[in-house]
Image 1 (cartoon, rainbow, N blue to C red):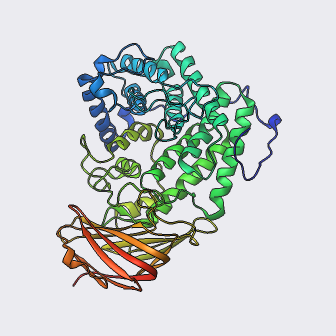
Image 2 (spheres, rainbow, N blue to C red):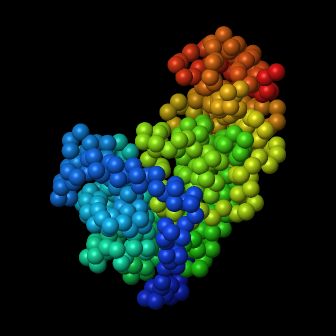
Image 3 (cartoon, one colour):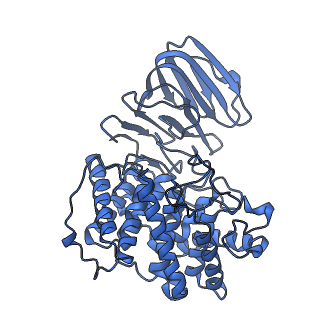
Length: 511
């Protein structure tokens, strides 16, 4: 076994009843039985998929050649997205939906790499146009290993929920594709339990494949993997990949798989417990007045959930409806729109938000200070005000920001006079500690720091070394910076403080 375990949980194979094990299947999904909010959210990506299919996918050819679409569309087409569309088609179960889903599934399976011994073996092309990875292929550039988990879990849901809607031979091939993905991941050995979103999906997929293929070694490895994740989570009640409107949503999807289909009561209980705890943590950081989760963000794609699609936002729309959900208008071309395709998954698995957390998502529950221990070295703090939220992460100065990663250890979001959201984000720093409280942000590091500020109507003259006069917000800065500079862009302003050892940002509403 090539997993990089920090701790080994010893299990007795004799305690695992493979032959008679039955996965805990969710209730039979039916659109008619779902709430109007779920049906409406589900219908949006399906309409996109239908339009794209009619416009481009009729050129689908015999699979396996990596050239399924016309040349001008092949690069823009997501193989993962096609698998998610197929899941939605089988759920919708319209007159031609099942036949279309079968065609798509055959194509997606043919886009799986079959290169034994290579790091990408068992994963799938990101698009029909993606070539075979070259010698010395670079991860994330030439292949995406996480698509083993994203597509494999989707295949698993299809096998669990809709076996009567696809031929038996296709079922066998889907199982073989999942087994290939699992075997490739095991031999790759790159996953660790703290890489939260793929680790959670893989924890489910190992269990699923082990039971379906009668592999007690995989079931045992899956149980070990699950126990490691659960032990790590319970250490501080958090995941290492902390507070991400995108990836926390993927975590919720994966935990829904554990909760719904886990082969043991222990796995289902672990999934349900972590799912509920994650929802409560997100609710603590949420401000319903701003429709946003406060930072700090371990991995962030945006600073305003009303301007891009997050997976958490998609799940919340199924409970809160369009008016209250933290999402932009869902239309083709919306930023990060591909995440709308989690709607079929959540429609089937259900969105299980504890009632106390759900109330916090529905309406603002008062100002509050938050402190969360993430790991031994990392502490997240945040102030949730009525019209402004800000967060910081102290890392024991083990992490910095290079301008390209998704780590955002200092963030501010507030309501502009227009009602829209303004935001401040630390985009560059050496290893840093940031703490947030009612007064603002306290920063400790040695070197240069850069902030990006987005607010309608902002001018370079509004930003001085000791004061930022922003629409709806005033920030007073105390620092020992040797130099200060302002760079005005079309949609934001970058401000840089050079050679600091520390600084405080005092945050006040503008008069």
